[in-house]
Amino acid sequence: MKLKKSLIGGLLTACLLLSGCENFSQNTATVPKPEDGILNSFSAPLAARNNDFGFQLYKELNSFDENSMVSPVSIAMALAMTYNGARGETGTAMAETLKIQGVDIETLNRNNLALLYLLSTADPKTTLSIANSLWIGQDVALDPEFVTKVKEFYNATARELDFGDAKAAAVINAWVKKNTQGLIAEIVAPPIDPYAKMFLINAVYFKGEWTHPFKKDLTSDQIFMTEGNQSVTVPMMYQSGSFDYLRGQGFQALRLPYGEEQRLAMYLFLPDENSSLEQFQANLSQENWANWLSLFEKKQGSLLLPKFTMAYETSLNQVLKNMGMGIAFEADTADFTGMIAEGSNEGLHISEVKHKTFIQVDELGTEAAGATSVEMGVTSVPEYDFTLEFNRPFFYAIQDSDTGAILFMGSVADPSK
Image 1 (cartoon, rainbow, N blue to C red):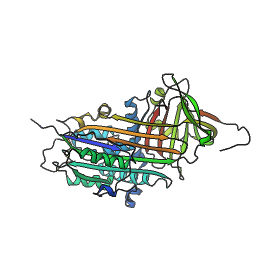
Image 2 (cartoon, one colour; image 1 turned 90 degrees about the vertical axis):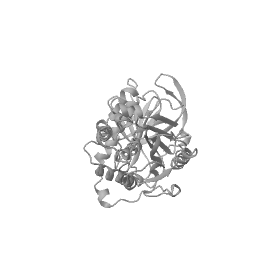
Image 3 (tube, rainbow, N blue to C red; image 1 turned 60 degrees about the vertical axis):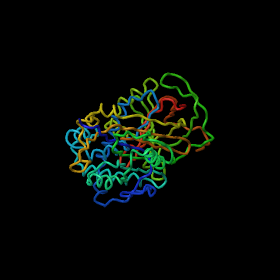
Image 4 (tube, rainbow, N blue to C red; image 1 turned 90 degrees about the horizontal axis):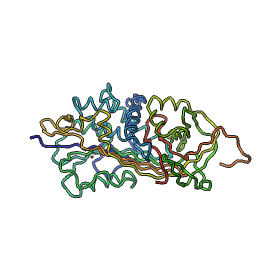
């Protein structure tokens, strides 16, 4: 009888670890600059496949009636590390789910390395750091080539750990907490499953100040109507001026930039009163997203936006199975032989992909983190082109304009929760 073995992959938002750094106390928020050939060959369309994957995953979660947030780049990075060890039908299924079919593994890895560097250096006035780590059980013989790829292209630290030790989960969670600046305290629940053999964890941490902060003395309590037509009173921030604005079919949208370079920005989408968040989210796709971004124009207007703080946690197992990679979760058929040393009889499969996120939005800016475990004054009344009041459920995304990578996407159904 074949013994059950498991692979548990993890992702989370936090500070980046240097490639090959074996001591977790030596992590840093910067990524070593890759060679020019890797940076010069960076493909934004390939990176945008993470967005395509993220939109589909987000819609599968069906989160129009609750607060939610996922990090497409975090989930995609963790699964890309895992994909390096997938073979046969398992590799094919993962490639189709991740929207990277037809892309050879070296091209994917080089592009992800360039993306890590480009994101970490996006703006001197924002903090955007990404960490990857590989935790290995003591009785697992990994393929050295797999470990080398994860270190070289994902700046991951590899560490052996006795999963049978009662303190093992605490060691991993301490790393998670440190690299999310305390926003996410736990990704692995103790005790660790005795069948667990490995954790792959990606972490993304973001903190950015608005290029044009909201004035605190203009914040006031206002009514927000939830999806269930219930009214809640929440603090609403106010700002007026020049914005990148879009009047779309059934919605309005606004871009609020961060920092000095204004590469990073939050995009806010407000469905019309005769529409709904559910209807808007049904149209989310990379094709529509790219089209919408091309249509933004500078307009004068005013904005009411609620302050909000929220945490979100979900298992992605069923969603990823629905998207086509169910074979990777099957103990008897999953093929991750690219991870293990030749001659090893490990029968690895993914046992759990867990995702955690956190976001706080206030007058000064945004602080956000996510974890996925694989386990202005005027002298007269101005004439505005628009007035946007985010007083009902809306969608948002934080994106880097240069690489096109979406760091976070989510919905606010009730900012009082």
